Image (tube, rainbow, N blue to C red; front, side, top):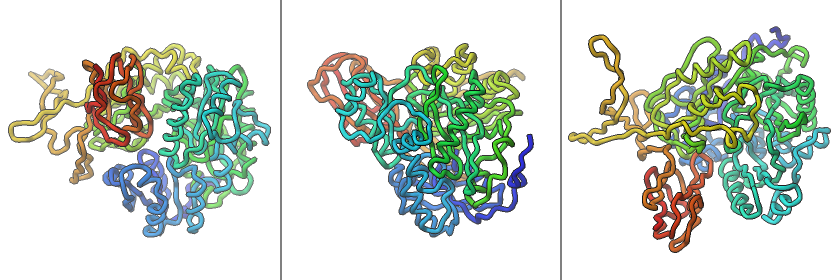
Length: 602
């Protein structure tokens, strides 16, 4: 594969110092490319992230106040203060947080600092999912049937459902990644779904506007990676199939899409370029479509770098972060659509801190007690954590992204299964067992899955519930943990269970960096909801958003009693016991941990 653009030679960068207004694996990913280009990096961090990997790797780091995203990574004043103190001349927003926030982008450019992303005007059009629908329609690209104005009252949701048929989708107008998206199956749960969507959108993106779309029954989610420079050049770099999802969030992505006609691929790519040109787009962007029955519909445009960008990098042979930096510096792309070619097939598995047993995907914050990364030809791991680091309930639960490449889909698939077997993450539950189940399933292998396939058809019943570390306190006051240990007896290797001292790093209580240790509240989590004699307990760390029952209420099996927010997602805590509520031990706003009692039913 050959490219005509000069940036392939990695000429000296113009930026001196880039501040990364993000955390986790994407901050680490950006820091690494900057370092290769000779650019100094600046990290920002919340109080919970003071010892995080992105902080340890950056050249400089500045503290943000508070622990929650709203207090820290969504705090414009604090980030601007870090820019001023560090004298950074550019800012990369990563994804999530402020990456699609027009006001933030304008605030950065008003400082005379380069925002590594599209101009604020393009974010305003495309970052708002409602106006992006209008822009796509103006460019001749049809969207999923829906409304092109914000929802103000629940009656609008009911009216829309009656017009287009149930179910329908409520979506966040100023975000993506499944945050703030709720599927409404009937008028009875419209109000509750609307309230939940607005809360999630506000917490994840700082704005709570929502809009409506028809919910397609068996679509595939296919997106086009586009790149545009400030000189009027726009190209598409191929598609990614992101149909393997749970709770409307992606689990596995791949490129190219299987069973996808090349004629449709070209038309979709051209449509993506038309949408980008319609809003004067510059830098990296992703135009998302739903594909069903041979037709595709514009879904939204994400005005940022996507989580799944590595699969595109693997098949087209480009560092997209480097290309972002080059374009932000004013350089032309230096290549045309005809220069782009694709080689082989790539998969990406998102390793999230979730317990997938029974298909529940319960959030599992806590400390990583053991970590082993896979390796080998065609295997890549983008991680934001290491052993000893703590995964907080206050942030997204993405631990790492495992990417494999092969000359064809089957080779890449088998390579991913091997890499998943090799990877070890202990201390928290992960999605690794569900990835293995997906990649081994005949329907997935045949490319017959859809966005609803994981939740509607995939059988995850064989995945055992995650069992957190069991600890005990010794006679001397030290903490010990039960672990599997390799031992040799007469030259033969055995696997045994032993109580071992945690050496100052109890599972779920600390995060280490070099010789320093940060302690916090113990966090054993990840198991299924526990109900014992009508006592409903918390399966994870979180914050109570809403209590749905009061003392004296009658409840049925499966009824939601508490809504718990953990890892930027709302989780319904239900009861498998019918009866009368005897006690309610929590209230909205309470912070709770695994095993805490919420409600007692008699």
